[in-house]
Image 1 (tube, rainbow, N blue to C red):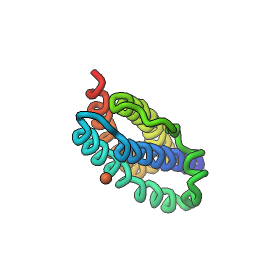
Image 2 (cartoon, protein in one colour):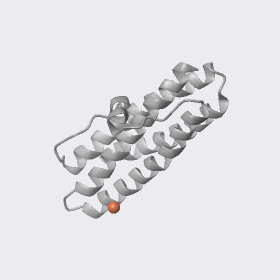
Image 3 (cartoon, rainbow, N blue to C red):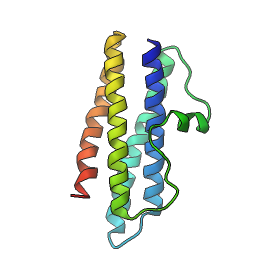
Image 4 (cartoon, helix red, strand yellow):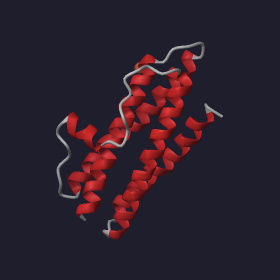
Length: 144
Ligand SMILES: [Fe+2]
């Protein structure tokens, strides 16, 4: 159970890192296809942020506490910050790689939920995994 709780915290941090990075790309993207990228990134960050509250509340339901500082969230996140503002296609390839990292952490969480006999947590993570496999297809389609 401890491993599942720790993994849920990694998933929360990674979710938040991915959300924040996508939101900054939504703000800063430039170029002839601005409207298309700005809109796509807007939908993407909203969808990622929609999960944040439920992930944290699942941690509470597992009788642990959610992180209380941004520093701790970023320590938990598998998504690295990016200081420079990249070109739109690099933004998409960056997010595709980060999305893959999130998928890996979700898969680990599903396996740990199964091992801990917590099927409701596993089902919750599976729904997020399903959404992010679809996001992965879209993000990768920009750079093919
Ligand atoms: Fe906006």
